[in-house]
Image (cartoon, rainbow, N blue to C red; front, side, top):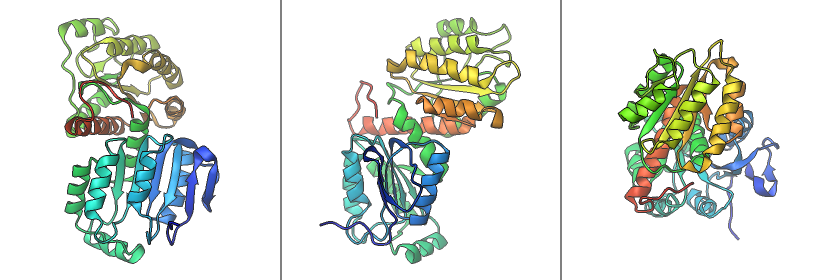
Length: 346
């Protein structure tokens, strides 16, 4: 018999409607698994995922790992058909398990993405880890090297971890990296462009033919360059036509669609139209990520998109950062010869 813990709050497996914890009972079913070495944080994030409507397949509290550890649970989830992405809050490993961690995680990440928040990055943080779980925190540089070797995506906040997980759980691994940005606001387009360069997301240089087609979707003062600026006068039809062109173009591998709140275009109407186009081109193999910027005015549109499997965020930076992790994971699959020229889905 194997032992989970001690010092844990239990575990959840939503496909079986099992919640053996003293945390929130209404955990939403979904494709993201969450492993945590912190009980209090785990319970808190169960509630946070409910608020953010993030569906989970499993939540596993690890505690002090006297027997089963993060590696064992990750191996199980790697073969779980209800889990597409594994997320982990990690404080440290058992003494002497570093090589096993790299070897096993390298096998797991060839099957599905793994995203880790490694706590205890600083000197004081390492001291806190030692007093909390007694785990070996170790050098942060060593963990960075291990994560890179094993194909693990490292997040530095809860927000990042679940942003990326949402994207990786719902969107396909693209055929390539060329990305197009479609926007109705020049400012958010510029922010997305900066984020793309910072996160190593290659932006497409559209051909004259593609620019000519895109030009037909906008007023004369719009820009068919990348970012594609439909202008503040854009309505649903402008967006739908531009989005369909992006899906149909062989030049485009990834799509980032941005909306900046205007008085003439209700964000919920646009969200419904984007879902309609997305459903039509669902098998295109092209990731679609969106950002609806407008605070309380765009909140319901963001929720509607996420409920329909389209990752949506309140800022362009978060959308681009999430796409960057899809591309980073694709590079790892290519590097390890899991992915050649065909498109696969997580």
